[in-house]
Amino acid sequence: MKSFAVAICAPSGTGKTTVARALTAASDDLVFSVSATTRAARAGERDGVDYHFVGRGDFEQMIAEDALLEWAEVHGELYGTPRRNLEEAERLGRRLILDIDVQGARQVKSARPDSALIFLLPPSFQAWVERLRRRGSEDEARVRRRLETARAELQAVDEFQYVVVNDRLEEAVARLGAIVAAEGQRLTREDPDLLELRRDLEAALARALA
Ligand code: 5GP
Image (spheres, rainbow, N blue to C red):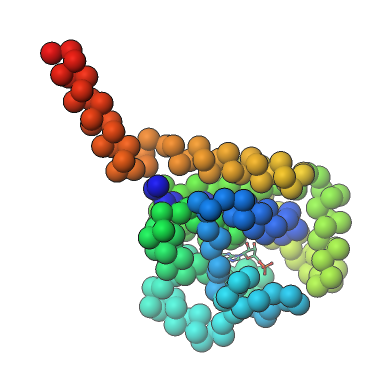
């Protein structure tokens, strides 16, 4: 199976990580891209599972060594996708699901034009702000900062190929699954098996019609 990257972006508080994780868990064809970050781990987060938590020096070294497929500064911290995440997904013939910000998604698309970019929207402003506030780690100043970032991110929706509303988790996951499956059937994806089948069919047709 041809491997490719799928970047899922959303304003903070849309439930993007939950959706991306649930999507990945639902299929053996998908693998979640664990990012590197300089931000501190939140309660319950595990190193190497949720993120690779690294110091600024180590992160800068990864940039210098060109070890990151993309990276960006988000809310004052550095976040990036190790190149080896995609290499490993390719080796396994799986699709890589990236939970990243808009700046990162742009870089992924320009480095790998066969990537799919999906934007997730909250169902309403009210539900969105409530979700942001429920996160124990967010004080009011932080909520405001995240909403300001969100305003800029919303303006980037037109750069995405797909938009999904995250109203009910199962529905959002089902829609994302359908998008990934459809992306896998794109003619531009040069699956060697499909190319061979097509050649065989053309040769057989030529013989049959000779
Ligand atoms: P959080 O700190 O809440 O986990 O993530 C903050 C933002 O950084 C989210 O929008 C998240 O998707 C984004 N992010 C996480 N990992 C990466 C990454 O590897 N690259 C980029 N560009 N953004 C990331």
